[in-house]
Length: 288
Image 1: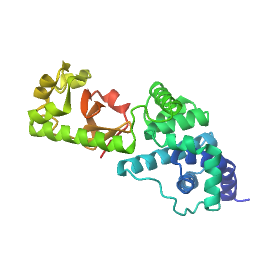
Image 2: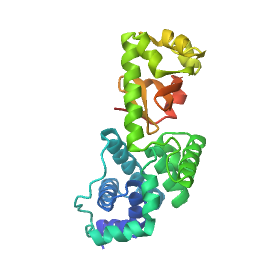
Image 3: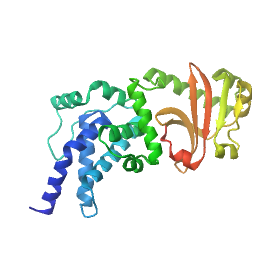
């Protein structure tokens, strides 16, 4: 048996688990096969010489591949397409897809689809496949403690049967419209428009770095917040922050300030500015 044969045999031993992980992450059998195929290609290029624990290494690779696929899908606001895949084993057919969906449970897949990519990864790997937070943390770029919080937040949403912030497609579109209007009004110095978007008791808060930069003193009340924000936010653009529409300013492709909004109906009731490097690393920020 050649070295390639041994490598392929060891990979095949791990294939069922890898495909199960990828399917729960992506909700598509074809995309799951694509992710597993990519893991095989990376293993074939790398070999097993530098791999102490092959199963853990492959799970990490599949997790990262799936996270990239989810982020790409989320930034384009696309649903998965079950196109034909060409993994080392047989391709996916509708019957196979139905068996996979039944084994996971369609209700769980639907709720998993409402989670932010990093929340979904943390929950799937920890709660469904018993991967430790220490192992998941490097995949999502968070500390183990923050990774635990991601999984806990996902768990609460799943137990509630959906996202805690009511992020249905219609609500998501409305939220995006409100944040977009806020950014336009702030950039243009439109005090009157800001007043219409802000709740009378709106709160503006920033972390220590945001305050140091002069970007977000602690303020309460519509007029004071609107007066402070008018003419600001010139570098901010729409962004997904942990899967929720917000805003962020970027420099050299990296987020420098993130704005998180709490919205009730058609009014903004809280704005949180995050500028500390450590705090920004704990957020999953994607420009829209």
